[in-house]
Length: 290
Image 1 (tube, rainbow, N blue to C red):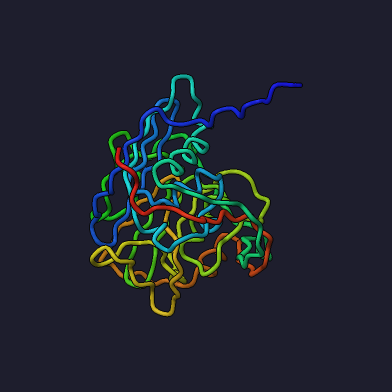
Image 2 (cartoon, rainbow, N blue to C red):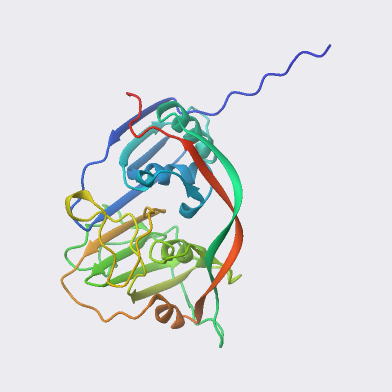
């Protein structure tokens, strides 16, 4: 008889600290999600943010309670010696199961999406002059005085900056891929946006548009901000490599997202596509103590 083989232990953090995130000024949101071979530092993240990293999916591929995208935490965790940041997703799964009693399963379902595709006439993209690994200095950040300050040393050039005006959103995305752009636009569209252009590389985008919806952005008294006039209101959290949302008293003339994309030779097409979804069967709203 062959001896039974034990399953290898799941990767886990050595130490984890989870605290409720401090409230942010009305209309502003800053999310930090950093991980290296030594430490994980997440600031103002929702559990939906953690779930999409843990299961390597996008925001709209996580289904669970509405509060998953609204209740926010500051998380710091120490990785074991010799661990790789590639193991962080599995460690997050272990942490969520241990501290939040997560139970989840994967399945596939038909999902209504917007396909980001090339419009008639071809793409009109501006190739990024600086790679995403370089930094954006405070002087290079074209935002008004009400935007949150740039951290010392600048911010990575993959980060997208957003400024909210009455009824419009201004997006500045230096050195973004089409996949990055599609994921960010998903926060402001009634359907998830999936990149189907087949275009690789990094490009500079700057656009102003009236969002169809505004998901997970805090408003008065910590509640969700009301969407722009005529927009709907689904539930999802802004997340990503990072982001800044600021407000401005200035008024900008804003067309639709479709008009903004047309300038770049791109368009959105409604489609249905099979998509993997992570279904949250159970999760606690309050973690066990540190």
